[in-house]
Image (cartoon, rainbow, N blue to C red; front, top):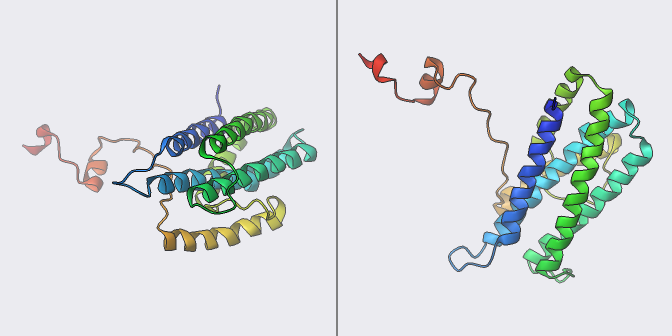
Length: 219
């Protein structure tokens, strides 16, 4: 049976891929000249939040509760840094910075390769956690992860600490700084969709949302 943690991460990877595919397929449009900027920024924000939440919530749990090991955590962080460097390259390419080294197709080949590697690494991490933690513990971990993700930095920070209390402190600092620049630059930062109501047809739900009453209730 799939745990809440496994299904949460699976849906996250699917969501990240959808944003990546939209950004990769974007082309210049006279009607929307900044479409590529917007889609690339959105993809980068979603992935950056995800990576920071894994650093803050899942890696400490793996280090303390499983046989995943410190060496595996260090290897995972090295991989994340490389992925974040590619996100820096994406921004440089989209905004026309002189530091951009790769063309559009080559850049997305590299991003796709890193995302495939990332999915495999996280699958191994989650498998270890699921084997060592109870169903209750993995549910709590999944909820902590989703909360942390909503509060995580929205830009890649490959050269600052990722783990431990220093990493968590760095993420808090960058969350504030990123939020300021997101507002200043008008970046679109998507949030998780709200969960559907447990009883979408109840009187309370219709009252709170202003939905019309059923004909049988209008008489």
